[in-house]
Image (cartoon, rainbow, N blue to C red):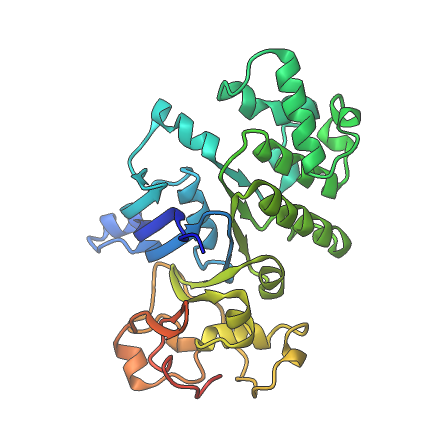
Length: 337
């Protein structure tokens, strides 16, 4: 078996920024509360794999994607791509990176320029990165990308505009735009959450097929555990800026070791009937503000199994199985399986 290599790694990644109350805090002489959107994330993406990052709104999962695509600058830690530290790389030096890493946004309608034709939208990255020269070569690249995204025959879409397409077709155009530069890693931020259920399955299958055909890696960001399980090789579960559990898609879905992951699983009607274990009580309340992260385990205010230690000490990430890790003081037991 060939050695597994990583295409991307985050090392103790942090994104902290002043909260909205900074001006009032300065006025009254109080320290401003910092929002810890990402608070020490270690994560790797392997070549050719699909890794899903799952979490509720406010977990920091989308910020992770924006750091990887260089839309947000981290305040600490490292972003390493193909063995090279990309944390501080900016400007024209980023051009090769833009070619190798692309993003698919949640809202395809907002992501597409309404005044541009589909041809120009898909060709934009190819032109700006000077990947091929000549109109004929660009036309072939655009046609190939549209076809790969499931828009056939591709020439029928060249002269059309975004408003003339359905929601599913627009999302396929966004995918085609990312594919046109032939990246090695695509970050997909909630790419199916705004689509009808029938269209979601089609888009997910497109992404799965593309991974197989092109051996590219995919970081798939979602709040939906069943969707993550249906597409991913591995799943990382985020909460308040940190990864609480990571493992194979089957382990995270059917054998979770963190109470938060268990609660996400038990809240899913499609998954719950497939589980023999007794469910935990449902989650209480909302995700706290990233400006007021609880002491100890950041999940303890909502955890039905919280102990005194959980309120005082943040648990380390420990191995709970082959290629399966969890950050919970109970992780080495089966009390909440």
